[in-house]
Length: 448
Image 1 (cartoon, rainbow, N blue to C red):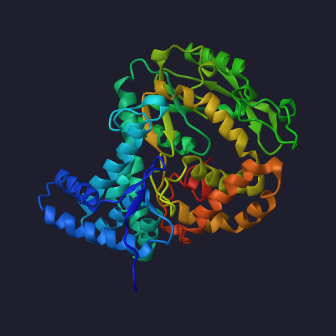
Image 2: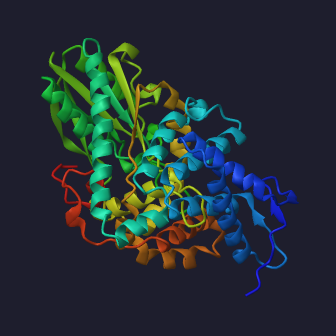
């Protein structure tokens, strides 16, 4: 078999330049030096393997991109058993991607409301636990270590929650309200419960004020051309009543908390009396907890702001990082189907409201938080494939030629391709009963 010699390469700006093997050698050797390596000859041998793979995959009349070359370098390092060098190379590559986007150094920056320092930590962890690509997750299913991955992720999330609780305790003399905010299906409710468990061990009783109960009746919400309601905006919630109740609770007064029925779309007539005692802390679990008008009646020193997001650092089959919002869409699809009487199609068609509200009312306030929790679960996609994959071929077909549903089509096609690349996992018994994912798939020890 004759292989084509690699002579040109396409840079990220589209320029075609001469291919130089020495640049691959330098990249591998630099990563090796980062972890204590000194053998440049070994870097040259590995570079030869990379070049060979490039030659085998070279197509007539086309050139490899820089990204494709880097993907092969990663794979060759891992397959050759140089895991530490591979990790150093991956992190180096990730950081330089952010530098090209005009960001500050990844390990310190949180510019633009994106928590890059936290993301860096998440990526580090994913590399160390062999779950930073769909390919690696599939391999963990194949080699029987997938249940172990579930345990590892569970421990990581629990440690993150414990760290947040410790910060709250450090300010316990002033904090009266803990706000747990984040975009839809990021894990706010489970996190709220677990924070409460930690603080209870320290002698403090947590009182949860479910702000979903403060939605206006559905008939008061405007409809779009499809007859869909927009209840993702904070204005869909009775902000005036919330602020009045928050102020009264901190003053030691008793309020009558409303109850909202999502199946009927209305507040019910009965209310629940609520009072905040001296040894109690109020927890607010809300999509819009960081939206200042939501809690303007409470001083900043009396509030602890915690943000949770699915900071997923997993690359798909196309080498791109999986979008956080796609993970949350899948979670919401599963949850809505059994908890809120929505079928997956309705959830997908409604998602543009969710994203619009997040961009307008959550992301701009991220810089004001006291702690960020990573709610991503690297093991969750194989489980969602079991629940949802069957629906997506029809979504793609039905929306493809509908000009009014192009947003839904783009999302459906992207998620279909993602789930198609994932191996399915069906045994949910290996998942702890208090795991965050059970907020969506059911079977939790917690009541939602």
